[in-house]
Amino acid sequence: MQMVKDKRSLPRHVAIIMDGNGRWARQNGRPRTAGHREGVKATRAVVECCADRGIDILTLFAFSSENWRRPQDEVTGLMSLFIEVLRNEVDSLHENGVRVNFIGDRDQLPSGLRLGLKEAEQKTAANERMQLVLAVAYGGRWDIVQAARRLAVAVSEGKLDANTVDDAVLNKYLSLGGMPDPDLLIRTGGERRISNFLLWDLAYTELHFTDTLWPEFDSSDLDAALKFFADRERRYGKTGEQAAASAKSSA
Ligand code: IPE
Ligand code: IPE
Ligand code: MG
Image 1 (cartoon, rainbow, N blue to C red):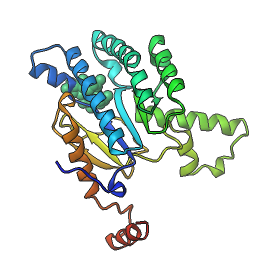
Image 2: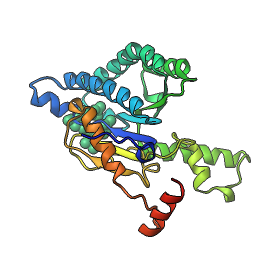
Image 3: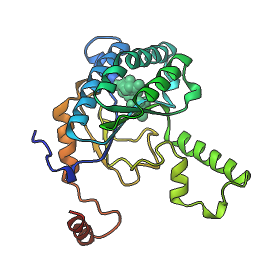
Image 4: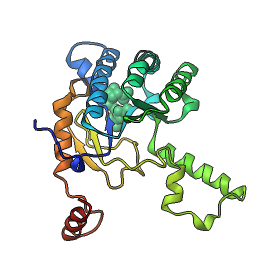
């Protein structure tokens, strides 16, 4: 797979729904937890690869607000795995200049994980090479609800005038508020759905779906997704001619 070399054709922000660990495990005659462990290896490689390619922000969907409905032993196993991975990986992420952030409903997480995420955020806060956003206990609807709730509180306390609430104001209250929207979303594992990921933020994101199961996703799959992105014409509602003219003037 040819690499995309022109930085202008590279997404600034890539978001990934890392799906297919369970099916990978079943295909290999192993328990689902083994699939999640194998998924961690793919995650590590993709983080490094994105930093190498010059991606500014990488947002990874690791656990959804609906994944709490899974069997208790799988949920407990995943929480322990997240704690272990954070403990093992934070130093090397830090050395590689990666800044770690977390989005999701912190209150739902076990205290060990909450603490690990906080420490990772604090330790890496000044890093600038790439920002890694981990979505854990995250749901797109949860995000819009928490934003609406905080916005309503600000209005009721007289800190915000309800008549000034627009797109940009609401955006500030969302978990990714202040960051550019994802340019490219990748979902592995064959399903072509959003599964309650970043509902607001994906409004104009290019969507790339691949049948590859997450534990088997590697740098060539990433390059295929980046190539798909480089070939898109982003029109944002305008005509193709308008889009081509503004791409030319910003070149
Ligand atoms: C994604 O893989 C990881 C999480 C949702 C935590 P799955 O566990 O959903 O894998 P499949 O979809 O069952 O194959
Ligand atoms: C989406 O995968 C969530 C993550 C990858 C963390 P799911 O496996 O939970 O999605 P559905 O249930 O197939 O839609
Ligand atoms: Mg799944």
